[in-house]
Image (cartoon, rainbow, N blue to C red; front, side, top):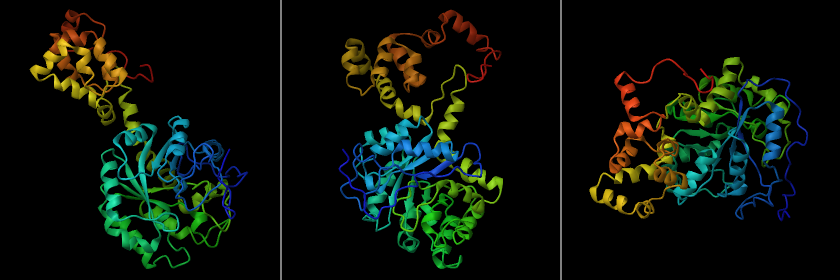
Length: 425
């Protein structure tokens, strides 16, 4: 049973949003949305400053399909604090069609970061909006930034326009790509050349690592639906000034709104008002978010299409770290003797996964490579066993050592034959 009671003044998400009249480009990404609970499965944080309605992954994915999006970027909601389970559950259920932005503390373990990365998290969020969180000293955020930079993640920041000057030194010193939520919340009733918005544009102009989400239409507009006229010039300026560093998202389920709850279909129909050409819309909705959140995966997918070749990427390096460290330990004569004398006991000293250990015991080199092994490192096991490199590698291609040696002496594998796994050619 859900023990959480929604705030009395909370506006639930639209119960029946319409299908957009405008058709999104293929591959479009909703680059800013959330999941709330359900609270009986994923409890809200005790320190939260609001209690929302339940808005789980099933509702989010229904909306994704109704609106015509291909993928989502799910941003950890402040009502869940640093308990990222609801967001991770949604990522796992999405089947590769979602990425996540987590909230973590500086003392988060390496194991937890690895688990989040494996689930699809590619960033962390720093929230400086005082009515939603209690902001911490700069050093708190710097410690987190150092941790996640090693994973290639980026940092999403949320602040009020008037607070940018105070946080300028911290933000511009962060060692990662930085994504600013909702254009830094400009006052859209002010002239477009107001000092706060000019400062934000200077941030974007002078620091090419910064991206901006031109989202929050329903949140920032005072003139309101259906045209949101006051929001248009601000968002259009950012899109046209920085076309390769802008993102857009629905912000579903629209937390902490007071004036109205938007129809998400209408929000999609609003996009052409701020991205006025087909090229700008494709960059905003497809190219930029895909590059930022799926770039590495897309590149690795292409590399995995090469028959008979496993490219040692950064992801595989992380996966195989303990396995390859074990292999390198065999460079020392005393370690080779210990391994030969009591193989099982020596393997116990290394934090190998069951699949990695089995591959070593079975001397299954293809399996070892699939588990993050590198042939250069694995060759230390060959040498310890007294097996030549050609003899060991021949087992990987189903050839005798003699036939493998003859093939290599003749110039290697023939260029004729299958060139693409996916296309079967």
